[in-house]
Amino acid sequence: MQSFGSEWIIIGLMTIAAFAMGMTLLSLNLAIAPSKPSAAKKAPYESGLPDITAPKPRFTPRFYVVAMLFVIFDIEAIFIFPWAVIFDKLGMYGFYEMMSFIVLLFIGYIYVWKKGALEWV
Image (cartoon, rainbow, N blue to C red; front, top):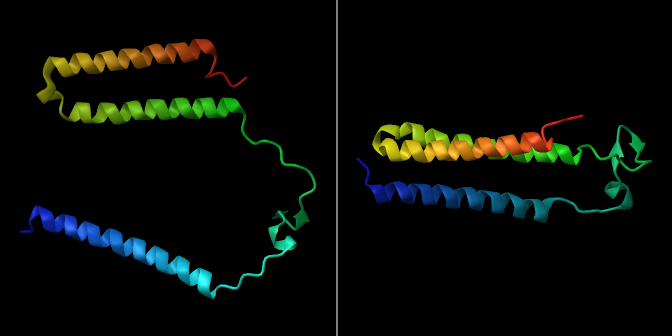
């Protein structure tokens, strides 16, 4: 059976090995790969046609609002899972704390809904 310290030594060695391998490959690329920059290589290129017009923005700001809301509610799930795992040990105090957390999230959800952040039209 391994001791607690030897597990950390193995993790440290694996981290050092991964870092060393990455740095070695990057260094070899800089040393061996030919570097001949030109204006043609730096120009944007798609489907054999040069870029004629500026690209249109792909995402509206509303998309980013919905993405941030998704992240917030995803983090909520991250908080609820460990609470559910140790629910018996926390007792009623843990139950009331989680209910207050869920109520605050629900109030935020209603606020966002009333502001129209979830409307796509």
